[in-house]
Length: 118
Image (cartoon, rainbow, N blue to C red; front, side, top):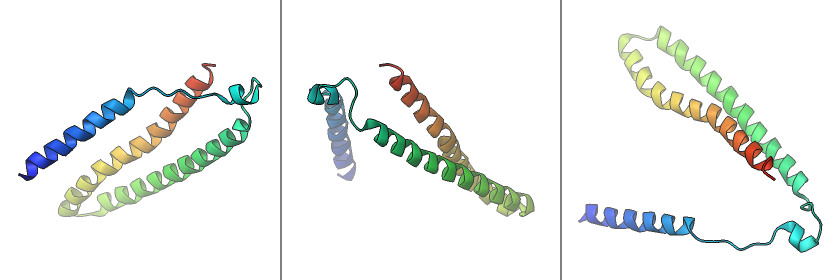
C-alpha cells in the first residue's frame, strides 16, 4: 500500500512540474512601464547579487579546500580500517566540492551568455 501511495504522489508531482514548465507568462518589462530604454534600478540589484555570489563562492572554496586537507591528513595517518571509513566519507564530499567549484563557474557562464544576448 505504501509503495502505491509513493508512486501516485510522485506521478502527481511530475505532472505538476511538466505543466508548470509549459505555462506562459505575459509580463511587462521595466522599459514598458517607465517609457525608458534602460531598466530602472537593475544595476544596484545586479551588483548586490554579484557581491553575494562572490562571497558564497569564496567561502565555499575556502571551506572545501580546508576540509579536503583535513580529510587527506586523517587518511594518511589512519589505520586500514579508518582509511576505508574515510574513503566512504570522501566520495560524497568530493562530489559536493566539485559542484561548488563547477556551480559557480556554470552560473557565471549562464549569466554572461544571457546578459550579452540583448
